[in-house]
Amino acid sequence: MVLAVALLFHALTSLARDDTSSSSFANFDARARNGDNLSVIFFGGPLTRGDGASDAERTSFRALLKNYLKEKYPASHFVFQDSVVSEAGSKFGMFLVDRDVLAHNPDLVFIDFTIADNLEGTDSKTLGCYERILNDLTRNNVPIVQIILGTKNYFGPEWTHLGPPRYRDHLELGKLYHAATGNSFPFIQNFLRTKPHQRDQIWPEDKTDPNDFGHQIIFEVTRDALAKAVRDQRVGNLPLQSVFAGQFKNRFQMFPA
Image (cartoon, rainbow, N blue to C red; front, side, top):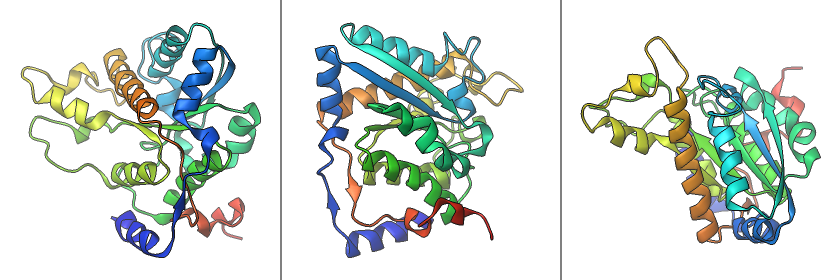
C-alpha cells in the first residue's frame, strides 16, 4: 500500500498540531444545540448525488442525514449545500473546494470520493488530490465526515480481505486529519455473514449503485461516526507536513504543461 510507507516516514519526520479548535465536533454540536445558523455541505460523487436511491431527495443517505440533523437540533437553522463532482472524483474535486465548499462558510462537510477515486487505485497523485481536500478543509477549521463504501463485488459471505487499496488509504488519511469516518465495509460484511442475507438486498441484480436499503446503511454508519466524534470531542488535525498533498504547490500541477 502506497500510504503505509508514506505515513511511517511522515510520523518520523514531522509533528502534528491540534490547535484548530473551530474544527471541533463538540463545538459544532454545542452551536447546533444553541440554535445557531449552520452551513452543512455534501461534497462527493454519484453516491452523494443519490444514485441508486428511489428518490434522491427523500431516501438517499444525504437526505436522511439532513433530516437527522434537523430532528436532532430543532433549535438550529441549517443551510444545506450539495456539491456533486460526478465520476471525476477528487482529481476534479480539489479544484472546486474554494467555489463549491469554502465559499459557503461550512460548519461541517461530508465528503464521498472513495469509489470515484478508483477503489483499486494506488497512485500518489490521486491520493494527493484527496488529501489536498482534507488539508484545505482542516486549514479552514471545518470538521470533516468521510463517507466510505465499496461496490458490490467487494462483499460476500466468504470475504476476509482487508479491502481495496483506496479504501485503506482513505481510512488512514482520515485518521491523520482526525475526520469522522462513516465506514460501511464492516457493517455490510457482518450483515452478509448472517444467513440468508444476500448482496442483492443492497445492490439489486444488474445494478452498481446501492438501493434505498444500501443508502439507509450508509446513513446509519455515518450518523454513528458523527455522534462518536462529538462524544470524543474530536478536533481536526492539520499536520505540519502533508503526506501527499505537498506535491501540488499549485493545484494546476496536476496537469502536464
